Length: 105
Image (cartoon, rainbow, N blue to C red; front, top):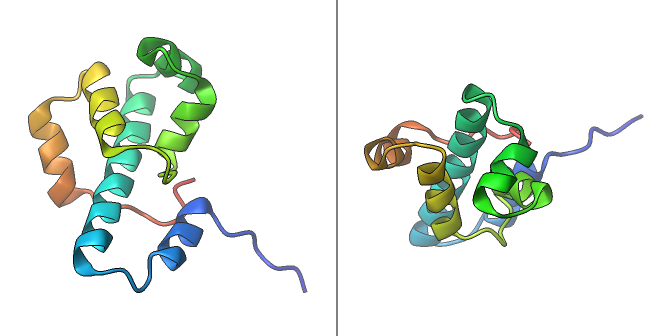
């Protein structure tokens, strides 16, 4: 029997089981912003490489940002969204309306 590989988000979700309410909400916010970043980048028809150049970063860092890697700060996610033209109102809205979807990465 072949087992299915789990996505990074599925692994993260399992790792965060048992955290307190505040920690869980913080992680959910980061994952939601990661998802919004990926969606907005694609909507603007930017590659990860193009976004990395805009941010003076690397493609691998953008990939980590979009997949909710724990090494990526909330600050970096917000700055990256602003850099691609997402309004602060839209970012705030993402906190309430875009729960992350497992399996995004």
